[in-house]
Image (cartoon, rainbow, N blue to C red):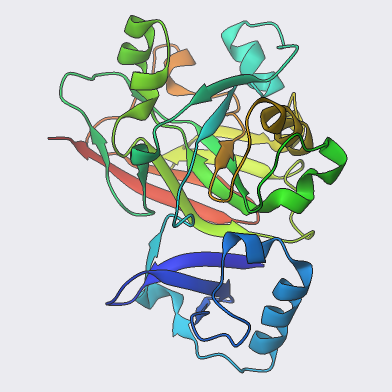
Length: 282
């Protein structure tokens, strides 16, 4: 099942996306949709019943504008070096524990919105990632129970200003520029989506740059939720991008980085394609 944040000439709201149609959820009798509700199997099953019975009005997906699928964004806790193929690419040993770093919530931008290259930043890179969206407060959760706290999964592009990142000796500024966290287009929920066995791909101007599968994870999603929730309390709206596979631009010979005029497509099987143009920032 896929949920989206969308607008159609008015304020944004939740919708259920199915077969090219967005079904508004604002008037569903059981109450206002929320990330917490999406963790509830009976709630998802109820919505599936309504759409199957044609009990909800529908809008053609091409007629709405999609937004990042987390309306009240909290923390963004990123995972560094979490694909075996990426560790090999950069010549690093596999980490013994997840490597955590933060990304500014103000970096998030919508599907279709431009990635703006800040003045003075010349080495802008792409990183396709599977994003884990938290739906319930999680404190010291065990891996075996981690799925109960996940609202769903989305596509995340961890855009990076490599020159700022390397000059600073830490990652917060280089990862945190405005628009450097495109997210969307949908939130995939339910057991039919396996976050640990799904294809992840990134294309620049139609040319494939990254092509892997989350079976390359060093730490899988339940392990990450356990690890992070033992370090800090996770709350609804927190997002855990799970790392990027091999093929990042800075590791290519010569480097292949983003420029104004480029179009970036980050895709995760079972969720969709997150497309963003690249422009000069102001």
